[in-house]
Every structure is written in C-alpha cells, then in structure tokens.
Figure: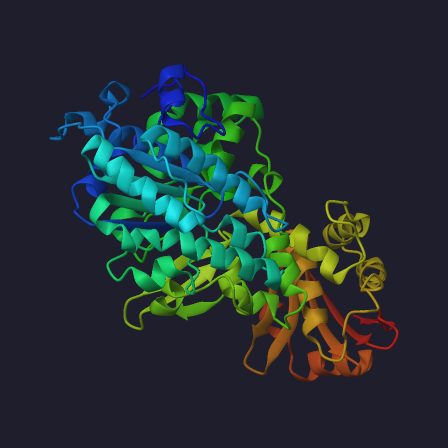
Length: 518
C-alpha cells in the first residue's frame, strides 16, 4: 500500500484517524479474535507510546457498531451483527497523580457523564457503588451488556512507585473501583484493561480467576506496534523519502530504522516489533532521532536503581524462567522487572529446553535514552547535558593515544560523586559500563582466555586496547597480570597496533593511579 496520507502521530482516537484519512495499520484481526473468543475479562501490558490507546479506541467504535469506520479493513468482511453495545471507556492517562485527590477528579468527571447518559438519579457516596450503579443502568437502558475499556489502568500506581504513601492510597482507591468487574459480571459483556505492569496486589488480578492476560500471548504478540512486513506494506514511500534525505538507499535506510526502533518482542516465538511512536516520528520528520525518550522521563527506572546495589551489565543482559517473567510486578525490588515492564528491556531469545528467556535492551534509541539517564547516578553531570570528556575519549581511542586516553578516563572518574559508596567494585564497574556504551566502540568486558579474564578489550579500526583495571591495589600488579597470563596472545596476529594498559583505581581519592602502558 503506497501512502500519500498523513502519519497518525499521537493519534489515539480511531474515529478521528479514519475520518482524517491518516494511515492506519490494520489491527482489526485482533478485534475479531477478542470479540469472538467468549472471554469476559482481558488484560494487555505494553510499554508507553506503543499504541495501546489507539487499539482501545478501535475496540470502542467496533462495539458501538460504527461499521462505516471499518470499511476496507479486515473485520468489515467478517461475520458480525454490528449491534451497538454501551461502552464505558475510562482513560487514566490524563494526569500524573503526584498528589492525593487527583484520581477523584478524573473519576468524578467520567462518572457524572455516564450517570447523566444512563439516567442514574441517586448518586451513591463511593466510586465503587457509583460505577456499579452505572453498569447496571447502562445494561437496563440499552438491553445490552456493557463493554468496559480501561486505558492505563495503572497510571496512578506507576507514577508513585517511589512514594509508598501515595501508592497505597491509589491502590486502595483503584481496587475498590475495579472490584465492580466481578460483582457486576451479570451486566458485563467485556472488560479490557491496558497498562505497563501487572500489579499483583490489585483486586482486578486477585479476584478475576478467568482473566485472559494476553501480554505474552503468541496469538497477540503484534497487537500493538509495527511488524517488519507492516513497515514495508504501509510505509514504503516514507522509507524512500527518508533514504533520499540521508543520501542512502531504501535497503540501507531499512537497516538503520531496524537498528534504532525495532527489537521489541513480547512472546516466546513472537516476531520483532517496531516502536510505532518513534518509527512514525522518523518517517514524518525524515530524520533519525530519539523520539521515545522525549516523551517520558526515565526516572521510573533510574530513581529506584539509586537504592539498589546492582551490576548494570548483568541486569541488562539477564536470563529468567519464563513463568518468572510472567509474574513480574513493577512494585518490588527487582530492577529487571522495573526495566522490562517500563520498556527498557525486552525478550531477546527463548530456550524451550529450559523454559528460560534472555532479556536485553531492544534497540539503539532505548539504549541511548537509558544510559544517558543512568549516567548522572555515577558521574556529576546534569541529565541531558553532553559530557565533553566522553567525546574526548572516543577521539583518543580512534587516534591511538593511550596516555591521553588514561588522562581523560581519570577526568571521567573524578566526577564520581563523593556520596556514592565505593566500598566495592560494583559502582566503578557500572560507571565504566555506561561510559563504554555511550562511546559506542567495539568493547568487550571480562573477556575469557585460556588463563583468565581480561577486564576490558576495546577495538577500533586501527588499534586494540587491553586494559586490566585493579581496585585499591596497584597499576604494576595490573600490568603483571596482563604479562603473566598473556592476555595479548589472542591478538598478536590481528594486524592492528596493540596497547597493554595496567591501572589501579583508588577508592580514597576517586582517581586513577598513574597507569603503566606498553
């Protein structure tokens, strides 16, 4: 399909999208699966800006029976009576909920509208009773059971991960509202909730034994987002235009788009998914940029990591039993759960023999956003502020200047805040890992050889750097280890110039000792 229409950037209303003639990637086959499945309660978790709201809006207009909006789409040719149902759509993504009382305003606004619409005369005292009355009244007035769609059901909770008092306040308030899904079951045709996490202590999960959670379902893996075939079916002209702007070919630009925006995976055997927000932004602007990171503060993962002693490299390259991944709750001390459910980690591989999944950062856009957000935890630099020394280190590596490289590394480490604990190597390792990731050069850490493990191997076009970094020992001891264990042996016939560097980091001075370089 050649597109000559506008990209639906930020468009979350299905009616407006269709009437304005914007491109719509047809996801109505999933609507048909849901409508004909027979399950009453559904749940889907996806990262922010992934098209959940648009899909809910598609469900809304489908169940309202507005068939004219679906002409030319998959579901228009299926068997369905298009009978209109009363639809209650609750969007909680309208506030940040940083104070108590904000959810009251949102709920009251929706409930007043519905009470007037369905003739609820005696307004109950609690939100729980009010919603129960609305559901029953809507069923009686229309003669049809009610469809309930809740967008970002967990937004008040996600916004208060680090505020236990507010979190518990909103948890109790939401639990009382969602309890109606069970108590009003006889009046309900369908409940569909979306969010970024599954909060286990919320009544919607503990009370509804027949809840259909399709978060990890292979049948619904690409219900949101854009697949590789969809990219080339709907956006060929956009890729051509973007490629022309960069002076490159269609195929080369497709590779670049994949590197930046693809890589999400939501099932054991699911295909990779592109982030729709970022992909559409790049095509509309004809520019590769970090669109996803502009729409949200990484503090949801960065702030909790301040209080956890974690090895970032291991955390960002984790393996889990699949059933463990299914049960992850955002409100716990596990940093991997935090990163996965916020969209900073995704499934990379599934091993059916051990029922384990390997997790990793989805793509280049997410990696840059995450590491730029993490850097201020370890180095005194304002978030979003470019760090000049990082660019200097890149230049040192490319030009083969090991002495200057070590001086610039010393400047980098001197920025470690003095309130950061340095009684173990974890924070030092994390700072190095963040730096090397931001540098973007070919880097390996803890490289195994026949005699041991090399701390760092950095490769450029013309040079290879073997670095042994000690912690509160000595630079000479580091160099002796390189020599005794012959860490350079695998690289002697490489053809690139080889630098051996032994150096010690002092936790007292927060600086590097004078290095030994050969």
